[in-house]
Length: 466
Figure 1 (cartoon, helix red, strand yellow):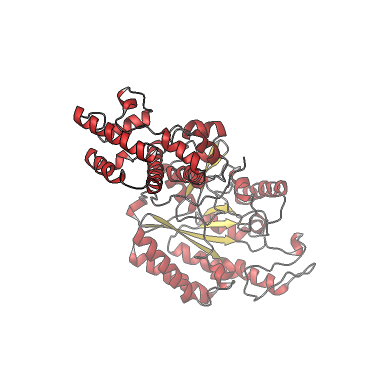
Figure 2 (cartoon, one colour; figure 1 turned 120 degrees about the vertical axis):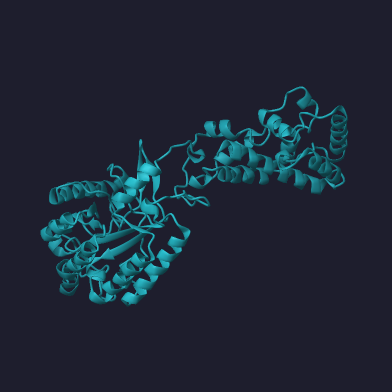
């Protein structure tokens, strides 16, 4: 059975309570993409020139030709932009993570030496700065391996993490095979999170395409440094107010390295320093903190269960009606169903879409409240616990007689037992509901009983999947 792979849930309504070092409200990750010399170019064996992320409006690849203007813009990033950023960050003693394209690093010995001297975090940005969208899986795996080899040869150490950028649908799974402390080819959260990569757990540190100077070269985007500053400031202010969040800022030597653009970044760094509450950290520092304070935990995931295990686990949630779990398993389950809310959604859908006769069978499978089965201790463990929660296991003789009379009258009128989620009620409110609902017409009571069945299932799942 194929399962839906996308995760729309994440941390949901209850993100972890994050305590960054020094009581910081926000962890800020400055990322400098080093791509100059790794972009598409016939000198690099590519079929055409580069056409992505430059100040040339509407750039198009030039098949079989060098594009001198494009090369010159990329060269600016290596020759001038990098060094302007290097001076800025080292003067302020700010940690930086480099996303380094391996072939670009190999063509930049002085820049690599400066990165290492500054103690910057040098991660891999792939073998070449090219699009992996249509790349066959095995070819992408080969290029990833070659990127690691070349990076290690050039830098003197393996990459500290990974970000491809122009990735394929296989990139995250392939880079998770490397065993690196972190990977970043996602944009889906404001906090790191773990994924299961075979037998190991892989930390993912999401990146950004909006708090990113690439917007100077894409539409809609920034046209002046002040716009970049305002966006960074507003993002920081919101995350600061929320607390316990991470803020990635994406930078490129040939873009933010220009004087009019870097002015916005400088204003933001000044603002963050003045406001306080920011922990400037490399991605490797964030990864180490997360692994120490929020380690990976594994649990059995309903969306990955076999049919037999799913029915075994959830077949009794709707009283004596395992067919509901059997049908639910065949739905398009995914990570969104790996919680009490998610499983309940799947089960309730199958209950709601069942025939009236099948739903009536579920209602009739429920025991009478404080009835003969309870007295004979023949209830399911769930029903026993639920009835006890409202004191229905400790009735006086008079109370028991009242319940038995009401049960008989209710069944005689409606044809199914009185059903109520007893854990939402007290003994007194149950009796009050009994007296009220016994007077309803059967159609109304059928709908009410079905809603109560769903509520009972919801409570049971909350106990099972905490």
